[in-house]
Structures are given as structure tokens and as C-alpha cells.
Image (cartoon, rainbow, N blue to C red; front, side, top):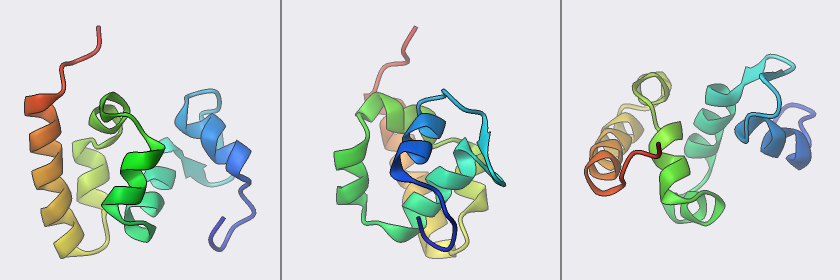
Length: 88
């Protein structure tokens, strides 16, 4: 995956919480790479709204490299928080 030797299975295990870290990547770092590499419509195909609500944290949004992406995902984060109920 990208410039590292992460397999799709490793990434899936990390995002589902089965692993805390793979190499130097934690869950947030992998999700950030996904947000910076794929369109929102692709991301929507990979995750449920509930998963996106949980993954799109303040920390993730702040760590996005590009201001335009930070602005975009701040808006998406607020919309998800208002539309998707919190899982209990």
C-alpha cells in the first residue's frame, strides 16, 4: 500500500481494531492516508456511516496535509455528527 509494504488484510485488521499498529502506522495514520489518496465516494464504499463518524475524529482532520482537505472533512465530520447516531 502506497510507499510501504502494508497488505490490504493488514490495513483492514488495523481499521477494524484487531491490531493497534502495523509498522509505523496506527489506525488514524492509515485512515489519513486513505482520505488523502481516494475520493470521498470511494471512502463511502469502504466504510459505513457509523464507521466514518468514529474514524473522522478531530485528530484525523487536524493531521490532514492540505488545508482544502481539512476544510472539506471538517464539514463532513460535522454533518456525520449531526446525522449519524452515536453507537452505544
